[in-house]
Image (cartoon, rainbow, N blue to C red):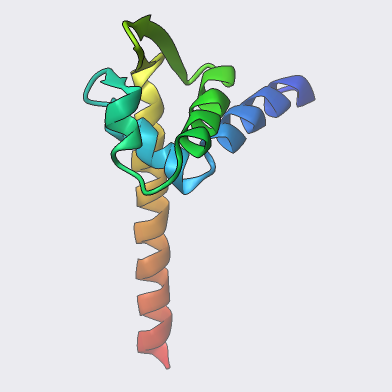
Length: 106
């Protein structure tokens, strides 16, 4: 059993990932470091919006950044965070299977 403090810390990390843009950024970074320009190019949002999403990930300890000339390079701090996505996908697939079974019983 975890303590409430541990649960709060875990919850904060999960909350930091709980936005479609941030999930996409994490997935994009799993193959290696990327510049802000590369990340920004994925989305149709303004730079300040992307910067805010990156800041949330950085504050949660999910990504780190370093300056390279006039650009910032972002890196996943702990690449195994993407393993979480496999578990989420398994839950989705299980839910679909359960719904299909329910539909077949009708």
